[in-house]
Length: 476
Image (cartoon, rainbow, N blue to C red; front, side, top):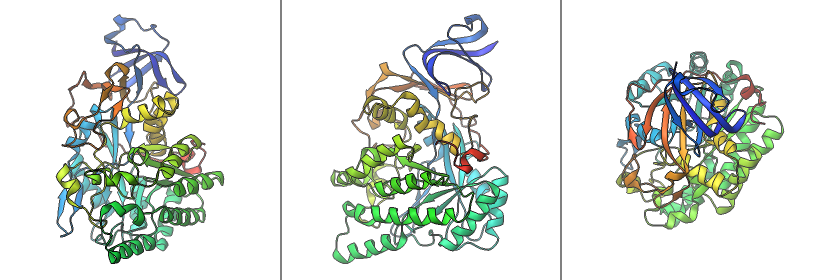
């Protein structure tokens, strides 16, 4: 006896979209069968999803929950915790999120993971995992701790090549230390996730604009510019090529120069993968001049319409593999408190509308297939991050993480109907579909606008990066 059978005519499986019966037993998909071959009597409940899109739950590779936002005075305020963000994620059809366990001096990586567990364990409605974030001057013992973390199921390491803002010192890692980290990642089959901007260019532009009195955040694209992305991407790629087996995940790609650097490296066989944000795809630097223009900003900055076009093209050519959010869920007051190039808060309150927005923009407006859309919001992320096929696939044996997108539920987005905070940068946007049901490991957590999840539902996902990803053979 199955717990649930979902019958659909637009079910997206690894073999493509078609008519299937999905049988669920416990937390897993027990069978993917030809349509109407599993009788109603074989299940506790049968759901007719005809006319709707049945897809694997979304995966967001880049969120920051209960994250410190440092003001100009140096006093941190924390963003919304996993309990809030994960609930919104499930309403929006995302069932897995990846956040960060931040290491800094005076602790071990194991300490950083234990500290982050205090924010997440039994405090999250959906499944989750961490990238290990390291910063600053790296002590001699850290490479060994990275190796241990990889072996223990924490295989992705986040690195900054810039301090991002003048007031935020100690974030940048020097290239000699990055080189040593690459050697450890290559040996132990890890993956480096990077925020890549050229620190000298960024800090030069901060100093230049501050001298000239052009301090409004509207000038942000001049500081965090496309040249900076070009220089940093290419330097990091060259460094990785000197250590065979180094795999790279370029976070929040924002510029045409970044897309080009990834594409050229992939042609040479470098195992490199690109993540962009729907913020970059749908807003550009002109939007900084709109009322409360800070709500459209994250780091690096929004770029030009030409850069946006390159990001869209990069999804067709394979340079961009995943669409994330850089989720930083805070209220409007916090988001708009900073108004200068050196104090504006980054990040997005965007995890809930991501799946529906990207279906609309990719499938509805730009002619991508539904399968390509699923790759970009779920499957590719699962493959890159070492979660596939447990996550990101509607296949026998996979976790029953399932989202049902209903074209009849299309709507105009408004903060009052979302579940994150008191504003949304997507106010007024129309979407062609909306999730009317979300399952996480077989449990119906959202149905018909009602939430049935529990804070004990979310589990930490230990991961290992596949040989295909490390070798560059995947997603080619």
